[in-house]
Image (cartoon, rainbow, N blue to C red):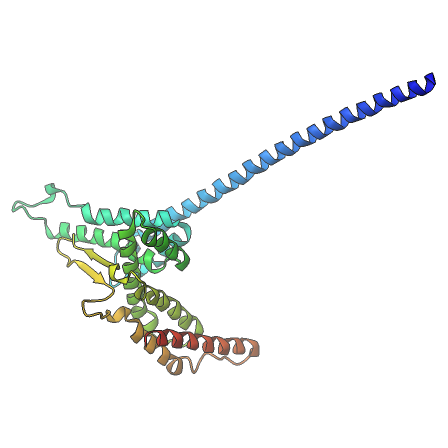
Amino acid sequence: MKTSLILIALLSIVVGCDAIDAMKATKDMKSATNSMNDKMDKTNLGIQETNDSVRKQKLILSINDMLDDKNTQDLEPVALGMIAGAEEFGKSATTEETIKYVFKLLLEIKDVKPKESLKDANGNFPANVVEAYDHLKMIKLSQIYSIAGFYPQDKLDQIVNEQIYGGGRYQREAYIFLMARVQFLGTYLQETLLAEPLDTVEAMRELVVRLGAIDSILKSPFKAKVKMNIDTFIAKEPIVAALYDDNGNMEDSWNAPKLWKKAFKRFDQDLKDGNIVEGSSVKSTDVEKEIVQLKASVQTYLNSWK
């Protein structure tokens, strides 16, 4: 009997020790897990900070590219040299950063003036001062045009949702941004895609995307508020624009119904030959299918204006 009691006691001690060891191991494991989780959280935070740092660096470089001397000389009818920088800006900037940058540029366009000390003996600004001053304003405005023209559609929709539908702080700037998008894309299409044969599916695809971006703004429920009035130049004429004039007409450069008709004719005029290259039946079939799809898309846009 005593022997049994001793064995039971010894067993209890062993089990107790094992339980203590197990509890300690569990505690150590939890501690190790928590430590590992902390390290992972810090690593993830570090990655996020690194990614954001890279993004902001790209943003700065995109602005520097737009402002490079070679890209700020020829600004009209549109600053084609700024497009690459503007595209990168659109990819890198958040919607908040974008609309705040537009606000900053518009404020500078409005308020920056030549120093009074630059006036001549007659109290007038010399011609070179006036030219430099107006050109500087056009550089700032051209940034807005270029960024707006090539801004990603999903981000533009977000700006509209936040600033226009949401009654945001930068609602006025959002309307100007949309007007700049229509002006830029309309002129861009006239100067590039519509100025040459639309004889490849890539060219026609881009036309549909760019003209589609104009189309959506022209049909927006707030279209009457989409306008621009830049009147703080010294010698240059004010830039005043609205989607529609008082009679409900559109400028030719962004007249979507007319441009869709022109695009539709190009399928028979330009895309009928030269797209199907012998040698790859798979590619030829793909191209033929896309031509049909693009033509159907243009026809849908055309019908929407009837």
